[in-house]
Image (cartoon, rainbow, N blue to C red):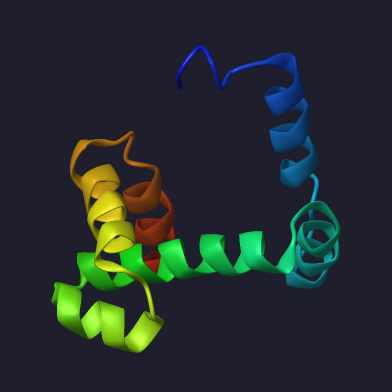
Length: 96
């Protein structure tokens, strides 16, 4: 993680997320900590990542999610050159 992002405050936030026990608790916490727009953006990026992993085209992803090609490209860059966070989580979800 970037030194700019890894702070005591971000550690505290991530520790808080790790205490959440179920989906309902996630909804309650994220609805308090994020604006509706922020939560929709996070959700959209995650959906884009999932679709990119399944080899959907940019056009199909844009049509189904409403994401701009810039957002799709940014998520694709994270999938290809990032810290493998999307892949880690998406792989775990596939196992369930």
